[in-house]
Amino acid sequence: MATKIISIILSIIMTIMTSIFPGFVWPGTETMEVGEFLEQVGCAFGYQVPQTGETYFGLEPGDEYYDAVAAAAEYDVLVDYDVIDATEEADTEFVATILVNAAGLEIDETAEIANAADFANISKVSTAVVNGIIPVEDDGTVSVAAMSVNDITAAIAVAVGLRFVPEDVVDDFELVDGVKEVEAYAVEDDTVVLDADADIVAGDVFVTDDAAFKAEAVEVVDGQKVVTASDVAVDEVIEKIDYEGTTDVNFSTAKIIDGNGEVISEGLFDTEGLSAEQIDNIIHGLLLTIGNISFSIGDFDIDAEATKTGFDFSIATSPVDGVRVTKDYSLSNLSVDAKADVNIKTLSFNEVYLNASYDLVDKTTIAGSYYKEFGEEVKTEGEKLEAGKVFNDLVNKYILSEFDSTSIKLFTVVVPLGTTPLTFNFDIMLNINVNGRMTITVVSEEFHGVSIINNKLSKVNDSKVIDRVVDIYGEFEIKLGLGVGFGLFGYTIVDVDVWGGIGAWVEATARFVDENGNPVFQSTYAVPVDYLAEVAAGMDFEGDIQISGHADIYGILEVGVGNNSVLSLVGLCKTWTIYDRSNGTFASFEFEV
Image (tube, rainbow, N blue to C red):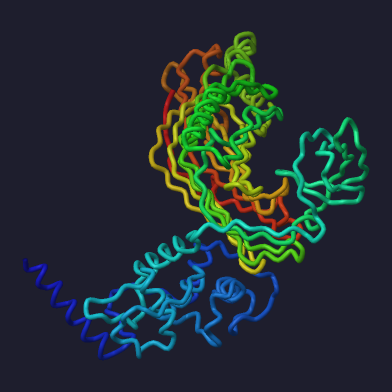
């Protein structure tokens, strides 16, 4: 009770002090400088630092906070200010104004703020209050003081969540004048077969449900028009795109193509005129069709199953003789928020969002032994240890061996957006580089995407690990890639590639002790512990060989934007390494074998 009374008294004193002295901060409350706040905003919203070398608000390249202020200025979050002092404490009004701009919120002046007259930019303070970025005190006022670090961090988190919330679905596009829409009966290589009445002549540009072509030659064969067609540039087909909405991906209704290019399921693209019961029956049939998918790509064997809520798949391979790697993934609750206000003709990306969220269960199992690969040499070359020479020779043979990284595309999934030709395209990829023996399971929630406003690019990332189980001896990196594209007529307008996974770096130590317990030889190697133990086991040594190891387990996250879409035409291509071993180590182990 005494503690509660003291807290109440302190609260009253702080209220009095802040009302008498605007800007007063209670001693001991940690605040944040304007420049530091802008650094956090830039990080949270994925801003890129301009390479112009210009002066921003009196700051020159190399000055403290220059990057943060320059990026904020370039992304138009400082438009309300002619002068700022990056070393001042960030107060409520500044935080509110910057975050309203960063989140792109519409101005809402409906908040009832008792001390509204204390703010020069009350419209944006009100907007921040309405949207939950800035709190209102019990007496109806909003603090004018410098905000605490914790409150600023919370405000940024709210603003990031508000950056794009789809409103009513908009799905509109405009073709370039003269482009014709037709229904294709068949498309094979460079030939498109149309109805005989189709208004297509040589030189025309036309679109079908999911592709665009230019007619090079047209002839009538057996009552149908056979068009010799060629590819056509996107800006000759599409004038503008205006889309906004959220799509929950149902893999059972999507078109699925395996890594060999074979169509596993045509999907359910046209639901016009179908009843709910008919759609359910079709979906049930599709699920039966794609309920047990098996195929191989090179040395990889893939088994998969599509469900209404997700996609489960398993990949197995042998990177070296005697070792078997199996990856099990369960990808579920995949949802995409998107907005595309784009003028393709002028290559103006006015406002673009493409964010994919999903749940992922990731299990890696590596079984087997390097004995089959190196064990025979251990047996035949084993001899009495001479200063570790034979041991070193065998270990070095391993170190010099090649364990190549392999990348494969497992699936392409095409998801229709309503009854329009607009689609989301998903490429599911795998990159694997392993040597060792382990089992590791990671469950995570992922949210990754891109934001473009007025041709300025920023990234969106949020990853939450829910659970993990680790048992490891070897070194490895395995990454799952999810490429998300927003497209029309076969063109990808905006794309985001996310590579996420787990890596392990292992260092093993061998310590040789003679029969009297005296150390004879000790050496440390960046090799799998199980291999080091197998080499040691094959040695003819009168004494004890002690094998121990250290492993760092780290997350991997790489994000690429614009590498496979129209974004590349305007130079909006960027790849970020968010996490790797240098900054993403989440667990370390010491163990003995």
